Length: 169
Image 1 (cartoon, rainbow, N blue to C red):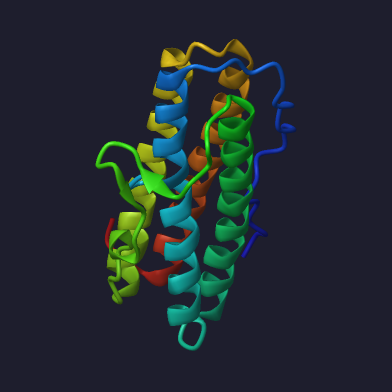
Image 2: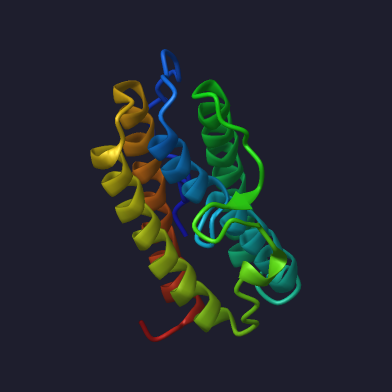
């Protein structure tokens, strides 16, 4: 099988000259540590990597590599929150609650897992593009659009993994 790429080739734009904006901080915090966030994605992919390592090592490895890219997104968003004057706590802003492990999808069936992951990645790409349109900090927009490229790429990788696993899509 052809080697998969898990990170889009474009460089991540520098995060600089961000201004305080409470609404931008709230939106970025939702992407950072909300229900469907980078934090949830990182830990969900790590869980799936462990779960599939014995029966599907190639799929497990791919999920592990996706988690590393998601971890980089988590770092970038945390830094952006901090640079805007926010506190990058692991909190779910819409609920005013701390993030918790119950947000992870603990499905153990590989096909169900991969199909849900693909839908989550497509949703994430849409959320990043929508947030880029809504945010006031102009220097933040290119970063959000760049992360959306990775999320779209992850959905494409997951489509390949779904075919590899013999799942019905």
